[in-house]
Image (cartoon, rainbow, N blue to C red):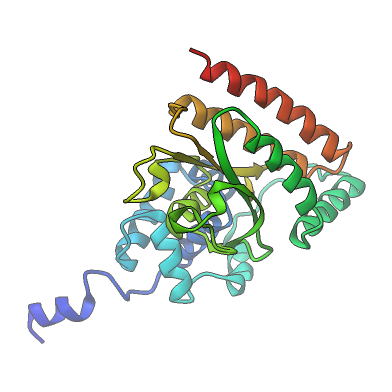
Length: 277
């Protein structure tokens, strides 16, 4: 076999099976772990984790972590069947104090309620409060599915659910579009023009992931009017707010609706101050 033929078959790494460690790390990325969290969990240096990720991306022919995760799922290299292998590969570590059973049970019930749609009414009320903010045109809230690989639309208000590029589907896979990338990377994204090539109205959409203890809970999507010069300040505000909402939604204590209302009022004041001339 000639060198050129060998290169063609090999595909510059594409098609080469991932190592156990590479599959494990991509699975942890898909589950919402950051590079630092993966390094701590596996007792590896951050650079070693980055090297495994780069090697996996090369084998998969991916140009980003999100694409690598998606391709690994397509090749059936990561998924639920990998859990046992990941557990076996993880190093033995000193056991951390476990949360009280009542706390763990409360968090489990809270997540189950989210998955079952029992919090959709609360989220609709929360979203209505967000859409009533000055210069906000509309919004949508997505919640993470139990499989950890997709989002479902739980609430929508205002113009962001209308036709065209502002329409959000009922379900979005992690890594799919700006919304899916924001969810996969656990990092807020800002898109001017709402992602529409033909939108001349100057609207801007912020995609802010809701997280709790590093785990993805969902994503808040908020679209502003052209009169609002939306920038990094608004992105950081919504990112902080979304993180707090995620913690409240899976909390096992207190009155979530009341705590969400209080958090919204604080956000309202910060949002108004940020937009003041």
